[in-house]
Length: 137
Ligand SMILES: [Zn+2]
Image (cartoon, rainbow, N blue to C red; front, side):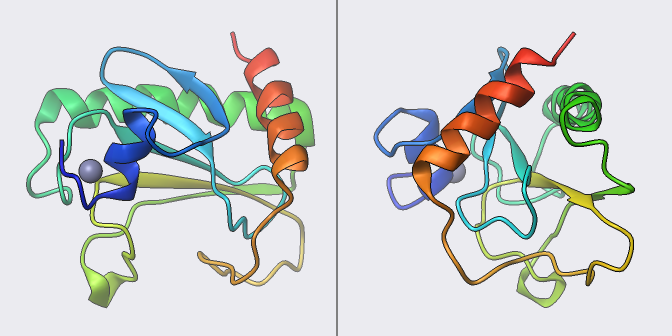
């Protein structure tokens, strides 16, 4: 575990998060600064900074979880589209240096932002996490 990493601290339960799903190698939880309602992050359970460090097995686990969560988001929100984005390095817009993928439901005409400035209401995030979690196969 990397003590300075907020995603490692979430994985350890040292920081709160609205978890949607987890398995042995991946964890999905709500982005606290959502670009849109239903914005979920999927991380590797182990700490890898980026795609260049992550093992093939951990990348596969995240991909499988991303597909699962994507279907849950579709059931709950029926978005017009869904952005799946994975950023490596600050030049690419990565802001937390622990491998993660964004799932961002989109409506027609939404701006293509990947990060938002405002924090979401924790109660609202808990409600959405429970809805998506309940819609998973
Ligand atoms: Zn980490």
